[in-house]
Image (cartoon, rainbow, N blue to C red; front, top):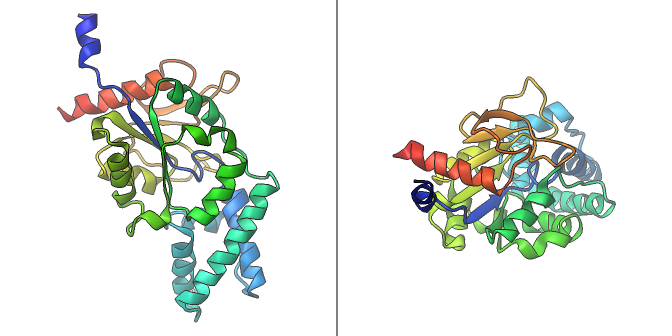
Length: 263
């Protein structure tokens, strides 16, 4: 019976990683600070505080956030000026990364290593632009880049999260069945994108989440972090943890439970 059960199990074959808030605490201490520095460079009296920026995270992509905010306050900036601000913001963000202020979250490197040991394909799937992403990958994540088979950024799709396009592309590039894939996300729009692409999703709450913020209940499971030996994961909802942290066995359990629920 046990052998038969194992033979009927779905293997975890591909994991898709979001970056901002999932792999690293980039938003409040990285992107937000860089936006404000760029606004200052262009003599704008815009300053996104933490509360306002958390609201803006409902908009996917940095340029889209600038345009959304411009429209909200009825600014006369045109799209090309917004694009220049976004380009300047990337420079500030890169400097913040190079200064070592952007840290990888608990358990991320451990899980990347473990998935690599089980020969699970790993892809980065983000709404960030490649220019913003590469400095982070080449500094904070440089020791683990070899374990990633692909990189999907803002430029690779026209419709961004919560639309499924980026994840549909990730499934296509992985050359795996949807049932064998899982996304790790930190946001409502990220979870919606993964579920719209018909793949399992683990929600790991971002470190800046406050107790009164909304969280998505559409993920297959939700934890406060991926966890480490000295910093165990805490389950918020969904599939029960098998050990003290998120590991290969737990992610495999998630995709199998998801497949079972679809029958």
